Picture 1 (cartoon, rainbow, N blue to C red):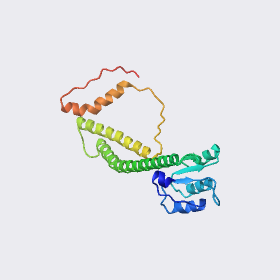
Picture 2 (cartoon, rainbow, N blue to C red; picture 1 turned 60 degrees about the vertical axis):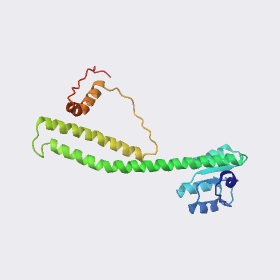
Picture 3 (cartoon, rainbow, N blue to C red; picture 1 turned 120 degrees about the vertical axis):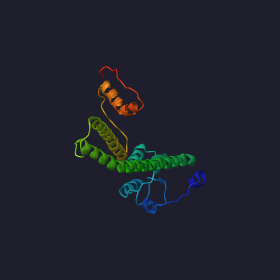
Picture 4 (cartoon, helix red, strand yellow; picture 1 turned 90 degrees about the vertical axis):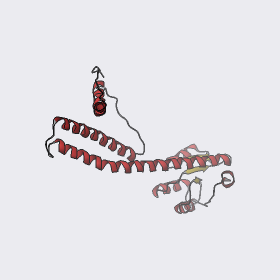
Length: 219
């Protein structure tokens, strides 16, 4: 059995209702579920697990050979299914795969929560700094010469880019799947080069380096 072949501690339930009771106690890491049970069948168990938000991987253990029933179980939240005719080693492997997948999901959830927390903490000070820079650029804190205004304008522009990056990271962390569908659009290569020159201008000036561009305005 699973205890001997896989070294797992095994709990058994006489029917679906008893299985739900065991799940409610929170000591179950993976559920091997028979679809044919008295009182509450496997489909009923899967539905109740979804309603009660019980997040435990489920491997359907079936002897009917009915593929449509197995697919229905997967759509209700089962991780996978295996025939009762398979050797117990195959069942153990399926259980271990389900446990590994569940662990990866938990790690991904923790990662997303961490990214969301960090980026949220960054957003407020960056937005505040950008607001202060705009106040200075409007001359509300006193007059500035042209060079000072140019430097502050560059800083404000980069703050805006950083804020956009933070917002994108928050959106990514909030989504369960990182899918970005963007239409390809032509870009002006010259404008990108000029932006990079502007970004590196202060560092280049400090090192007495002159930056120039020789790019045609093509896409």
